[in-house]
Image 1 (spheres, helix red, strand yellow):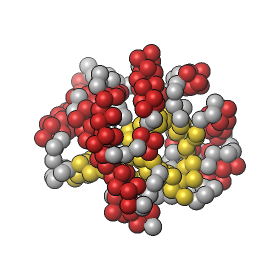
Image 2: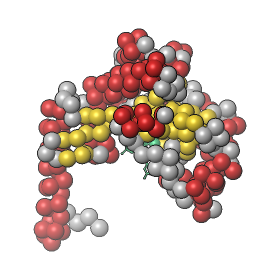
Image 3: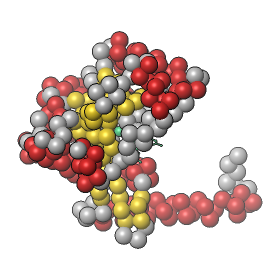
Length: 275
Ligand code: C2E
Ligand code: MG
Ligand code: MG
Ligand code: MG
């Protein structure tokens, strides 16, 4: 129970709360200084189709290597970047770099699949977001069908009319769209058919318990069937075991991403995985 007024609770919680607030403040300050530096590195995690055995896409995942604080995970700095608005310049850079890398692989013949890029709501809501995407495609030369933008359903549902209109514009340009962490939001099932998306990514929380034949397995199966009924692609996230691969493919979900296939890695390492 959170008893902030009790003397004992304050004595017990204050140092931890203060240090959390300090850490947050520290990250905010450091983030401002780091935006234009070399401290940010894009990692890439492969997505595989288990039928063809081929890598079909890669997801760009941002890493912050701070000179003194060490590696700070996105789960910690992305929320700070979102709250401060720094996600706008940072996200624009991620989009540009991911598209440029993908176009390099495509031109060299190393890999001709898709690159997935995570987009925060704050970034997506910029009035010129669609123009930014168009500019990135023009500058890098990447054909739009090789770019997949990942948004969470929670983000899309914030301002659904406007966001759906924006999604339509992107689709009109030929860019692909995926719903990330599907199943963790509130709106999911009833609204899915109204969203102009191509792909649904089943959240890791449903995938991890999938072989245990409990509720999570039922939910994962329902998501797969619903998505297919609506003509959407399904990717399972966070696949870690052969049993999960087995379960998912026996339920007609063949596109997978997770540590079982490969962790997020620097581009040099990914190039080796491309063969
Ligand atoms: P996400 O987009 O859902 O990305 C998948 C996350 O799951 C990644 O965490 C990935 O490393 C992790 N993952 C993949 N396979 C497995 C697995 O088999 N087991 C487990 N335990 N984890 C797995 P990561 O890289 O720490 O990123 C966390 C979140 O931070 C991402 O979740 C995404 O929401 C956000 N993020 C990362 N990069 C960016 C970015 O450039 N822009 C924005 N806006 N958000 C980003
Ligand atoms: Mg994602
Ligand atoms: Mg996800
Ligand atoms: Mg996520």
